[in-house]
Every structure is written in structure tokens, then in C-alpha cells.
Image 1: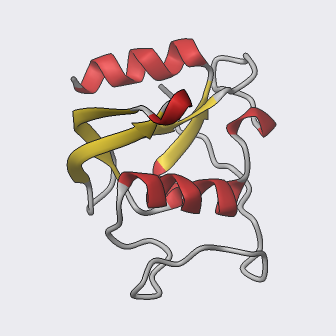
Image 2: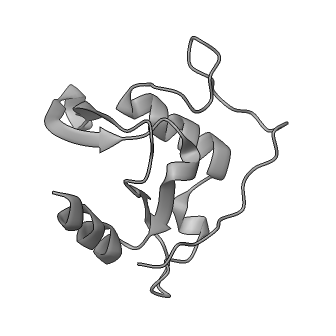
Length: 111
């Protein structure tokens, strides 16, 4: 899959640092995605490298600070689903905007 450079939001735009003040360091899965959205916006604002409309942010597995652990996904009616094999990065630059199909292909490559 080709590497794509995406525009970033200027530093003076609202961002959510973790408790240590870092905007790219280790954090929870949820915090990583909050940082990503705050820094780069919705994935649907971008085009996937395949040419389709991007729908999801996908971790590109190139981070030197890769994290693993539980991913807690809040569902409707207060239920929580836990997936223990999640891998993520706290750095928004380690994500690519992909369509759903390309995201699944990328995930299968690393699982």
C-alpha cells in the first residue's frame, strides 16, 4: 500500500494532551483516537490511496512506540466490548485514512 502524506491541523488548534502533556506519547486506545480526531479530523475528509472515500483511521504499524493491550469500545445501552489484541500508537502521524475494505486488508496483514 503506498504511503500518503496527509495535511495536519496547525498547532494552535485545540488538542487533547494526556496527563503528562504529551501529544504523541504512550496513552490508552481511546486517548489515541481522541488525539487523532483532534489533530487530523474525521477520516471521511480524506481519500483512501485506492481512490475511494476514506471512512476510518487505520494504524499503519510503523510506530517506534507501538502499544498493545485492551481496547474498550463503548456500545449502545451502556454495554462495553473488550478486544484484548488491540495494537495502536499515541502519535496521530502513525495513522492513515482508509476506506473500510483497505483497512480490513491492512489489519489482516498484521494479524
